[in-house]
Length: 86
Length: 372
Ligand code: SF4
Image 1 (cartoon, each protein chain N blue to C red):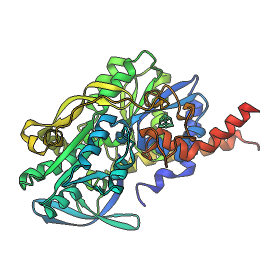
Image 2 (image 1 turned 90 degrees about the horizontal axis):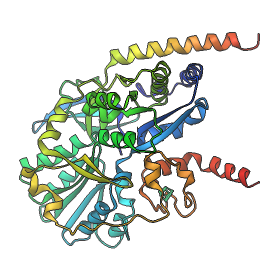
Image 3 (image 1 turned 45 degrees about the horizontal axis):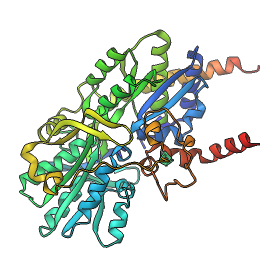
Image 4 (image 1 turned 45 degrees about the vertical axis):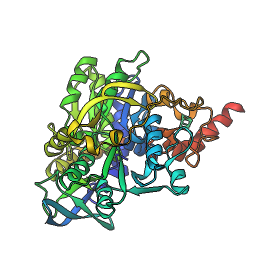
């Protein structure tokens, strides 16, 4: 019910005061209202819940967190290696 | 798919679990509030991956599951009226009322429809001015803006035959109730990332301070949840109790302001009954007076009866993290997703349904072992 999934905006157009986007989720596309994320542009990833985009995913933040996590993963690999049998 | 696959990376998941194991010096009980997170934890077996000291407790975070029986009965009564087209999110159709569910109403000839978005209910209303179109508006803070938009739009277009049966709940008052309860064992919370996408996380700072409990806003993929657990464990081990944000790619401190503004103009905060938990003060949203004409509760006044839950159902304890679904005497026997006795078995996000789907067999073999 609270399921919200990320998708990529393929195109967006104005209709009766609202912006409606065509958003791609994996293999399928769906219409999504952009009323709550007026800053979202074509090419952006948005989190979509019951037909509305509720946030624009912050690529820079995601990148930064991910790098941290990967470093942690690499470190863990080394540690695991050093603890394992020779 | 970007923003999904990398957050399911197995190597990273294992690495995070190992980091957590290295960090803990004693055992900790953590609660995730949101049913979507419960679902991920069960589906990927994260609970089994974590070191033994970490106990994950599943909170009341499924709006379908906490919608009170009275409201379900009210929905069924409205849906059964002649001239009414009743529109709902799919999960809600199978929730058992006192004697039947919405699907039964449909099978008996009622006009009951399932939609994916509230805007589809509005579309139906535009197409059928001859019907009274009633939308079952349930949800947490995540769904409130979308439901508010439907009502707002209906008034703008003068769709007077459209109304909403609103059953909206808010997360922070429920967390307060759980933490203040005499049996509380929860020492850290994973706050629901999509609720916070809308609301930000300002409200959680006071909770963290008042109860001296760490809270981490978490996302919904395996890597998100393990990172959130890691952040909580780090705080607990270091004696800190702060609000931190793991789900930075979607959640900001302030949240989504345009969405908050719309919710504010359509709804007002009110007391609300939660299934299995009773009335929690200031824990719900109802339509404001200016939208009375679109409020199904006022359009179709029903006598408010209090109804009892089936006696076997221990959902009250499950919702508060006091018992696991497998401790229910009818779990997997008389209560299954095909024949749910309680709401927790209906929605995929309900704790009982998640256990049934992913843990039924391990529960059975444990029972057999115990019997042997
Ligand atoms: S298994 Fe069914 S009856 Fe038991 S607590 Fe869960 S929903 Fe209620």
